Structures are given as C-alpha cells and as structure tokens.
Length: 224
Length: 243
Image (tube, rainbow over the protein chains, first blue to last red):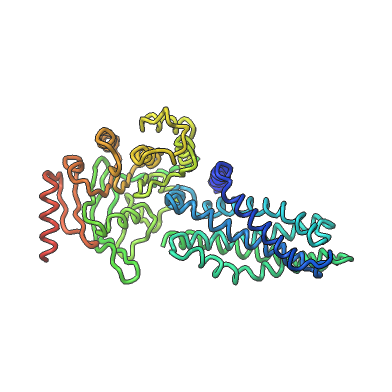
C-alpha cells in the first residue's frame, strides 16, 4: 500500500514541479490573506492578543481548500483518478498518496506563513518550535485528512468548488479551534505545558478518527 | 511488485442478469453474456445504451444493482484488489497526465501495476505505439490519435487477461486503426478476453467473435461470428424500436 502511495506522491510532485500552478496560487492566496489581516488589525505596531494564532489557521485553512480543489481538478480533467482506482493496490492507497501530496503542499505553505505571521503580528510563534511543529502538523493532518476524502468524493459533482468548503469547514471546525487554542497557548508569556499537551493530544485524537474513517470509507464512496 | 494468487487467474468472465440503476434511471437492465479467453466481444448500441456503464462494472469501478459478475469462479463482490492486475481498461477519457511525458506516463502505470522494470516496460510500450522518438515529449502536445495510442499501451501495459476498451478507434487515422485491429487480434491470439464498446461498425465487422446489441440498457440481440454488422445493427435497433 505504501509503495503505491509513494508512487502517487512522487507523480503529484513531478506534475506540480512542472507547472507550479498550485504552489504559486496557494502561497499567493495565503500571503494575501495574512497581509489583509495585518493591515486591518495591527494598529501602531500592536496586534490583538492571540490574533496571530487565528490568522495563521485561517490562512492555512483557506490555502488548504484551494490546494484540495486544484489537486483533484487535475485528476478529473483526464479522469486519471479512475485509472488510479483501477490499479491492483488497495484503493485506500490512492487516498494516502493524495493526502501526502496535500500535506507536502500545506507544510510548505506553513514554512512561509509562520515567519510572516510572527513578523507582521509581532507574535512569539517561534519561541517553542517543538510544540509549534506538533500543533501545526497534527492540525494540518486532521484538516487534510477530511479535505482529501471530500475533494475525492466531489470530483464528479457539478458545484464541487462551492460544495467543498460548505462540507469541509463544519466538519473540520473542531480541528481548527484546537489548532488556534493550542497555538494561542504558545503565545503566552509563561508557557503552560499542560494546556499545550492537552490541545496536541486532542488534535492527535481527531487525526486518528478522521484518518481511520477516511481509509474505511474511501473505497465504497469512490466505487458507488 | 503485485503478487498474483493462482486462484485469481480466470479463463472466462460471466455476466449474469446484470442491472445498474442510478437513482430511478436504469442504465443497464438484465444483461448476460460470457467473455471467454481468446475472444473479442463487441458492445454495440447508440449513445446512452449502457455500454460504458457495463464496462465500468466489468472493471470493478461500479457495483451492479442486481445480478452478478464472475471472473472464473470468483464473484466480483468477493474479488481482492489483486484481481485488477488482470484487467486492463481503455476509457473514453484517456487516463493520461498531460503534464507528464509519454514515457513518464507509461512508467508510472507500469509501476502502479507492479511491473518489474517499469522503465524498460515503458520503453517497449512506446516502441509498440510507434512513438519511441516522441517518448520524452509531454502528452499535452500530442494529437488525439497519438494520445489514443499511448492510452492503449497504458491499458495493456500489464498484459491483462481481460481488456475493456471503450471507443478505442476514436481519433485514429487509417494506419493507426489498422495497427490497433492487428494489436487486438494479437491480444486475442495470446489468450486475452477483449470486450470493446464501439460505434465503428465498419471496423468492427470481421473483428468480433460475438456482437451484443444494446439499446436503453437492454440487450436486444446477440450474434456469434457476426458478418454484415451494419445491417444486423440496423435490424436489431428497428426490431427493438417497434417492440
């Protein structure tokens, strides 16, 4: 299963390196989003308390939605998703491969977004790098796990661009709230390790539930 | 590398009273036939007759609403993923990545199907498609006929036991059509079962071992070793219209 997932990831990265279409649009959108919030909320060099945590996750969420839509649009144009489903590997391997591709894109976007948000909102985001990586990684996996399943399900829906956020955001709101609260906890002058551990543990629970459900439902959803 | 269990090898595919509904719309209704090794079966009928739906069910992409499909003694519903290594599908859409080169497309699908040396397999497939000199060009720059040739090699890259071809002659010039007909005959000689859906009755004439005429999802007639397909088709469709 992992061999096929790796093949799909490698293929997706090769296609993206050739076109750079999703990388450029996702990064441009995420950076624009952060800049707009910075102009709106930062007054005389002072940003609202914990605002940076919310802005960071909004940018990740919007960029993720854009990346999910474009990635599956590519598989729709020549019906190549069907070709992947026709392969002899277990069909959840296709899901894992696509999920890894989305994660690679979102982690790349976060590499740019974290220093940008820290700079514009004067937030101490990089004060606890280990915990920041843990929160971003677990939150992003939870969001992308549901997003990848929904984007695959909607591939043949006519209004897929509208339906994806309509379905995705309500389901992933708990993940985003946990991500925002966990990131906000990192911005406090005194780090409360217990609170941060709680949010990370909650995010890990979401990840386990979402990934398990997605692996379980991917084949029936895609074949009927 | 995908392991093929001996129990997964089959020498015929049995379609028994298969129906498929999409909501209240009936796409295929109670169709039955057997596709044995070394035969070419043609699914013939107008647009919306259910040919592509039937091929999707044979490819395990859709489950029948009623009836059964059996690969040898194995029910489609019990079939493990490895069974799909025995099935090759050429769809109406070509299943190729336009940003990748022909070689990369073929190597990717060869690796997906667990071929030992994906690069070597892709090279051989490009030779068969007559595109060895264009192998490093992105598929986006190919004509429809060239893409169709690459797509056919992609579908057959793992030497399937059952080949399912949806409108394989679309966009091919005369020379490519003749090459494809000869490729299909070679595939039949090698013992594959081939099921193809086509509108090109003139090309299919003399190629098919069995012609199945479909209309509005129903099988209206089946002919063994059909000759004079065009008049048989017209007759089958007229009789159905009157009934």
